[in-house]
Length: 288
Length: 246
Image 1 (spheres, each protein chain N blue to C red):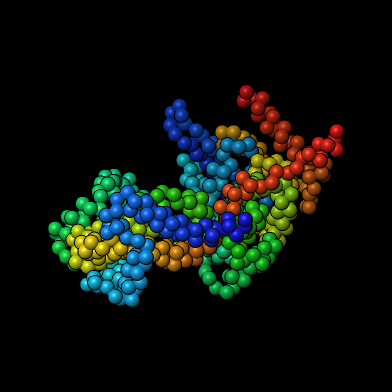
Image 2: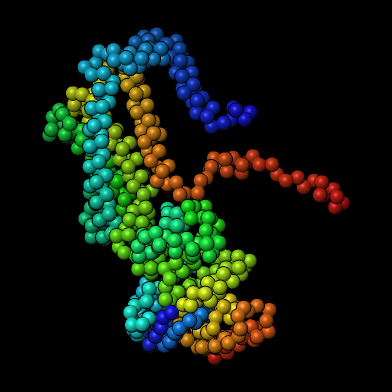
């Protein structure tokens, strides 16, 4: 029972469950509509496609590594701009009522725009190349940076600033050791959201206004009527996201937040439901 | 050691009918190697007074002068909640309030950590320590800047009675050794009598109503008759005031 219920087993079981569901669905749908064989890729076809791509054997103009590198560069530049500009605006909005009133409606408006609208507009304005996609990354990511940084400023620990002031600690020391660390959780949230959402915006921008990159390549496979290519690239997207989340953000977060008392939350919740109740029966009997 | 002179200190919030007087024309003078307690019920203005003395708040009117040999004295402050930087180690927390980062300063910080029996906890984060330990770090931090005057705002009120008792003893020994002025705010009359040479009694509305010398020898035990007599005197003062006001 122990092995079956461990978190690792559950994690491995999920892809297995997906695979089983996939195979079963294809069988069922083919019974209903035999012509679906061209549209629905089998897991084996996707697996072969992925394997070919990894060996640089592809029909697309660029292989999977070049493609993702092109997209990653755009995402990186756009993300840096979103973080830099967004942090400045967020700080201003958090510290000044005037700045907040000035920017607030624009932040809400930008947040409400679908990625597609940005993608179409920049492709008309900038055509092919890097500028358009980078701008879309900035526009999709920046509202999240602004909102999170503003919350960070609003949630600064007043009592620690008072402590610092009562000991006559200098402004620069206070900024470095009190303000910046207190903003870290919010900066991390800003970074994660703007990265994930920027990526989505980038892919849409590349589909509609590019001639290279991960989004454009996925559309290439769609145009070529190769469903296994589309699904295969979706798989690459997932791997890309997981790699960044686990190996980049998580690793940095562990270092930056190592001072937090560790909690194994899952175990705590399970214990609430599973823990053995103390047996009162013997005492009751003895008292009789 | 420092001299603290307060003249006509007045602090109020709001205007008209909603006006709240936190401190009413307070005048006092504290000087030398003394342990002064400020005692009063919750809301009597004692924390406000401390905030004004340390510069966190400004008075509505009146003056505060804290001096030692003619220059501004550097204060130490111990808070009700330890107020440690959770993202820095214990040693870094002490170093944060120092003037420089020299090895001599670091050694001094280590000495004060040893004094509160946390010498081996320098590399731990506050989240890894118990409430009592965190408060001791706060005390070590305040003492480590070797201030002329030490302000303490109900530092033991959040701790259990046993831990508080042992910390009171530690505090008394550190004060006796260090020869500085301590201003100690508390609502616990017994604690005030146990630790101080002098007790300033505050009543609701920020009024200074009594100024008592406690001239008993140290160390004092709560069970001592003289201690009980001093306590009784203070409680009687509060009862008198209740009769007058109501």
